[in-house]
Structures are given as C-alpha cells and as structure tokens.
View 1: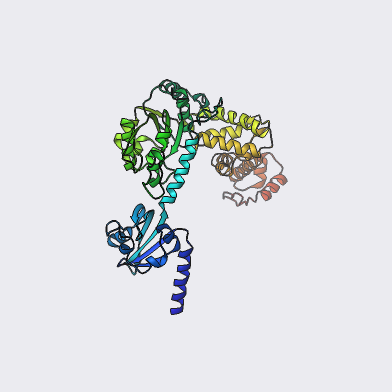
View 2 (view 1 turned 90 degrees about the vertical axis):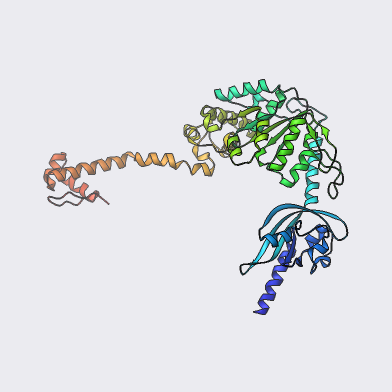
Length: 477
C-alpha cells in the first residue's frame, strides 16, 4: 500500500512538472509543498528558494489579503483568472494571471493550488498585435477598393429587402455625423461590413479604420490594447499607443462590446465624453479624435437586463442605432444572395453552375439560417465545391443540412405513398368490403367485384386475406 502511494506521488509530481503553466501548492499554514519549474521561471526564482518556505517570506510584497493562495485557504472559495502583481525576494516585480483553487481532503480544506500564466508575456503578445495595427494605420499605398483597411462600402451590403434598403439609406445620411453609433444584429448578418460602409461614407474615410472584437482578447489585456501602456507599468513595458490613439482621426469599431468588463466600460465612457485617453501606468492624458462604433450580437434590451453593459454607456452609444435584420426575416434576399454567391464562386472555381434547383431553394426558404448571410455564403461555397451538375441540388448540401431535409420531405412521403402501394391498398380495401357485404361468400364477392372467382382467390392469397363467414376478414400483415 505504501509503495502504491509513493508511486502515485511520483506520477503526480511528474505530471505537474510537465504542465506548461506555473503550479504552486501550499498547505494550510501557507508553506509551499509543490512548486514547478514553470512557476519558478515566471517568478524569477529557483525551485529551492520557494519549496518548503512560507509564501509571504518568499514574496514579501504580499500579505494575507493580497495573496490569492492565502485568500483561498481563508475563504475556501476558488478564484478564477485574477491578475496578481507582486515583488519576489530579490525585489523583481512579477505579474501573473492566476486561477487558485482550494484542495479538499475528506470534506475539509487542506491547502490551495494555484495555476499561473505569465501576464508580462501575454502583454508583450498584445503589444505585437498593436504593432501590426500601427503598421496599417497609414498605408503607404492606397488602392481603389481598399483604403485604410476598409474593403467594403454600403453598396457592398446586397439586399432587395425594403427594410434593409431603408436602413442603408439612413446609414448613408448619418455617416456624416461624428456621433457614436450602436449596431446590433445576429452573428453573420453583416455588422462589420455595414460599419465599414459607414466609415467609407463619412468624412473620416481617409483616416484609419480599426476593428477590435472585445470577446477575442482576455479581459486583463483589453485595457492595455485599447488605451496603450506607459514605460515601466509592468515588467518589460514600453511606451506604446493603444487602439484609440492608432484610430485618431478615424473610426474605432468595438465588436461584441457587451463582452467588455464593466470596469473597463466606465473608462470607455470617459473617453466618449471628453476624448481624453490615458495609457496604463501613465499619469498623463492625451486628446484623440475618434468616432466609436460599437456592435452587439444580442439585442441591447437583453444586454441591459443581464447587466452586460452599463446603462450610462448604453445611452451614450445609443445616439445613432441600427438593428440589422436576420436573414430569415428577409426571405426575398435568400434566393437573391444565393444567385450572387453562385456567380461569385463560378468565377473563383472556374465553373458554370446556372443556379440552385427548386428543391434547394425550397429548403433554403424553410431553413432558419442561424448563421445568417455568412452561413448562406459558406453553404454555397461548399455546394459549389462538390457540385457536378448545372444546378445545385439537395445532394450537394452540407451533411448537417441534409439531416434536416427529412423533417419536411419524409413527412410528405409518409402522407403520399407510391402509386403501386396506393393501388394495392385500395384493391385490398375493396375486396374486404365485398367479403363483408357477402358475409365471406367468395363467389358472390367475385360477382360484386366483377372479376372471375379464380382471380379473387389469387388476390386473397396474394394479400393474405383470411375469410371467415359472418366475420370481417383481417388485412394483410
């Protein structure tokens, strides 16, 4: 038993040492009982400097309140993805993102384990992203169809739906304003295309257009990406502008703004109010001239009810609002866009597909299109790749869509049987009724049916109809 326990500890230690994240385990007294090489590398220490020692002695800048490990032992509650800044025993400042969990043995907390990611490294990666954004801020060469990272105009939003056409006209008119804009609509309905169109139609069209999805960046990095960093604000930090400064004299598109942390929304509100931006770690503010366009893939009412967006920020953004319709509410656009995409992919794949077959169009009109125009485009692209005829047929649909065809088509086949089956059913019914009427007398039933007695005998055998005098014959199995 003792050998098995020793082996289990060795296996566990080997696993924890091999994990590509810092692992730090302490007992109830706050003494380190496990500390892997990755954690040591993050903290700028040797494993031997930490193992067996109290946390507060190794990291003197922490106390019982600021140490996530000691806090979890005290509260017995986990902490997820919390940024922690501290100084190690050598005086070096460290920043990590920690998930800290209580260790429960026999129903009681016996210590805590912390999984740490190097925050400084993540910030450096975010700065690389900013460098790329900076390079496209003022392109050296402008092309006819792509100015300052803008590929689309409002004319690129193809529609024959009257409501969508009305929205496009209103957007073209209001694009000249510098007021913030809020756009909402389901995923795939063309929000970024629409926003690029507004930028192109505005007086800022020669300025930068920068888009950032607020849900695509960790919360702890989003602030430095938006507002920039000052030198020394964390280990290795340098003076670096954020997206607001990079978008100066242009448009900053913040997609999925309801995914932005509430605390950061307050800072965004201040920028919208006075146009002043302060980099992370800097005491100075600078003025920027940026038009903010925000978007959500849920209805603003839902975001407010779920407290995903501050009320004051919503009303500041809600100066000009556009709600883009989902594809299922623009039925006339389905066939229109399908034809457009077929022509597009004909050129791309060097094919000559004439269009979509009647069955495909019927299915398209009945389908719910949760992915909207993006889903329709990708569906057509798949079908164009596999199609071998002049028309796109149901057999060319993606697998998941094919699985939905039976709900309509098989339902129809259940109601309408093949002609031969219908004829046989009707014939059996006539024979049974004739036998009932003649109380099972085959000769008289044959006379009623105006067929030879031998023919009736053959059909009774074929359909396995059993005749009992004065009793209704049963139907075939």
